[in-house]
Length: 362
Image (cartoon, rainbow, N blue to C red; front, side, top):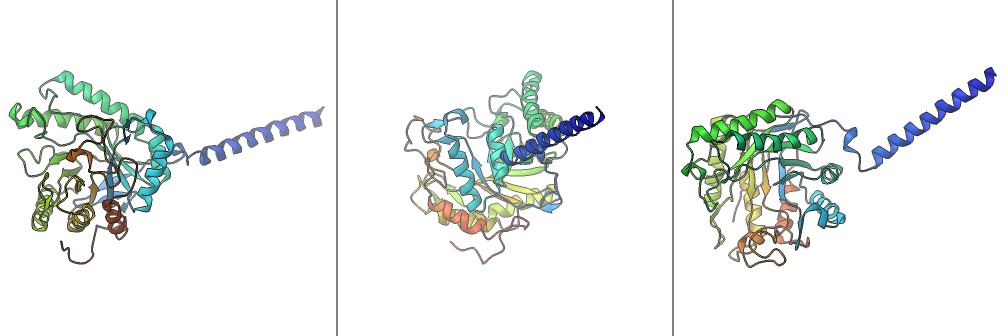
């Protein structure tokens, strides 16, 4: 009886050990399960971003869930995401910047390919009432839903809580036409504080339009100071590029971010639309990345793929500048911008302060 009991006990223990081992192996093999990884510890000084204590220079692309006439996670074949991230890794890209929260499977896949994510988790806009407590609470609820969902995910680099502030390009015009700076700041600061209370391990950023009134909104409290700045482009629709202008823009960004506010600056959008025929996309992007030098903590190219949903009929690619910004086309055929990104990002180590090569010429 005693031997039978001993055998039974050993059998049960052996079975449980086998099940545990199999489960552990399965979880590790299933997309390098993010649940078994610890979240990143991201910190900043006046110039740099650090991941787990090591300098991290952002070499990024703006990324949206689109594929020709198809938009949304549910409507696009899963192998598209796999191909995207594989191509990004081959090009030396280490970060994607989103305009909406990513579905968890996409976050997991990004992590598997070693990509970090700047995740946009809410969207105050020109239609937001910045004097409304109800609007503020709604945005806080949305943002905190995704912070709680994703803050332990090892792909998350930082949170983004607005884009194109103060929305000068909208039909309604700049929000400074309707609200004073103190009202806007108070609204956005409370949104920021709610996110920092929920997660102290990741910086919070928001991207502003360079060179316009309100270009420093939020810079007194944000952790990383970001600009949408299409370096050297004096006229979007003609596509004229001016290297002298690009240098003056990056000098201004450095003076506002690192020198004045003592925080790292980040180019959240720059690039060149192939709708413009004045210059080659790759040649312009090459100069934009190089001119950023070590004056910012990273450069994010707008954008990964052409988006057909921007200008008109989402079923076709319209003859409009907004639908031709991709460094690959809607079906992931490489443009000259991809070659430039691959070449220059490949020269910049992640644990560096940016491009330190030859003199920039154009």
